[in-house]
Length: 95
Image (cartoon, rainbow, N blue to C red; front, side, top):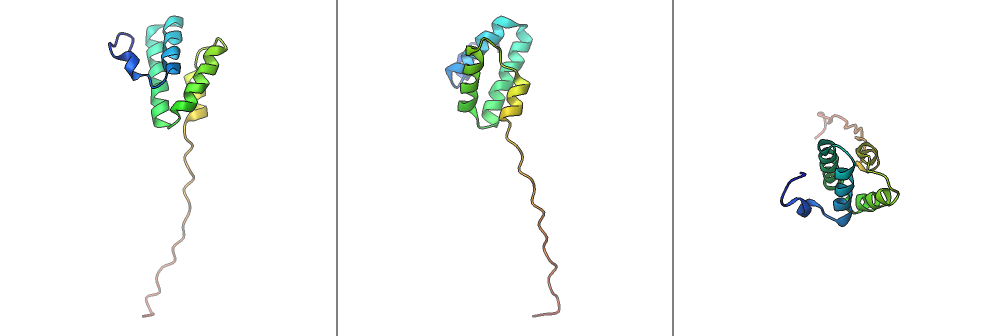
């Protein structure tokens, strides 16, 4: 991700590009890439791209770096419980 020519085209909003720059400047390149790919995956898979962008801006404005585990816990959709449905057997004696 770090040296991709089309990297900036991957970011759906400026907050993601901003997060990338902060992550890339702050730590090991491999960790920055993993975190950024995780954020992009979360945004797409969780259908929370706009909300996540707002959260990223708030985190970066506070002078912090995004914590992928925290953001996944907050934005990953919760699975709906499976309903237990009871279906009575058909009455074979009636027409």
